[in-house]
Image 1: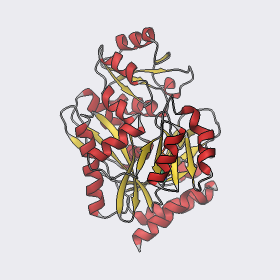
Image 2 (image 1 turned 60 degrees about the vertical axis):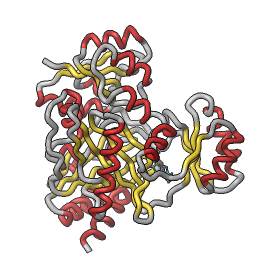
Image 3 (image 1 turned 45 degrees about the horizontal axis):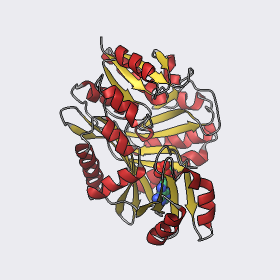
Image 4 (image 1 turned 180 degrees about the vertical axis):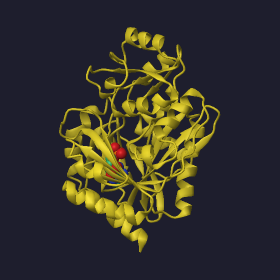
Length: 383
Ligand code: AMP
């Protein structure tokens, strides 16, 4: 019996455990809080990721370790890797945790990125904004997610405001300025690489965010074959350079017909949740296969899929359960503003059926605004 240890016990760990059940796997999840939602499905070890006694107990009880949470300290991952195999490796995790290291690596691999500059001091902010121009975004280098730790600068007077908001973090998590990209679309490529180097990607996904949080995803994204090829090539170059093992996502902006890399998530990703029902083998199962050294499964698409995130509170499930191709995921979390509490995926054989189903579901749930951009894109693709 193999036990997979997961650092972080949120919905990603929960979905990993669900995907691992048919493979006969056991899990141990470690989280800092006792009500982590993966604990409803797997034994939960409550402890701080920096606590060596807790990490030692975790290492003793698992055969291999992986992450649901990318901000586990890289030193903890390194400490653990001396005792048990850890995938993805601590070095890959370390790069993906730091926007500056990540963007520098993208550049080194010829993956286009928005112009960026390190901001260690207030004076450096002036120089950085002079370099990349306005509008731009000041972001924390580490520990930012879902648009948190970001300040948008539009006019020169915003520099002081941005520094007031984030300057105190320059010495701790670090800061970076990035040019603002007036993108036409946000895309992601979710990919997986096995221990033997086998590399696969799921079809490219288009994503819509609201207040920095993912709201909806559509797969396959209606993009030209050359863009698909470029996105896949970028993901492969990254995975190979990092000797990456497991599933990861590369978030991209499409601007003026060109892809620009935003960030890499060294874990299963929200924009790949649709793969549970929409792909032959999901991002969760393939991640487990990868970290265990098992053969990877087919990442081919089954029809067309749209994922809708439920943020704050779960809506009524009736319309979704009633819809052909409707799939419901409740993470078992208590409601809280801004918290991802669940999602739904609508999977249909054709784009027209998906469009009609989303129209109905959106109306019945009172979520017309959430489904509108997806429906508009599906209609464009059909025209
Ligand atoms: P991030 O945490 O970097 O993924 O940012 C969250 C969201 O903010 C992204 O999905 C974009 O919608 C937006 N965003 C981040 N960086 C930029 C940028 N350089 N230009 C325009 N929008 C951005």
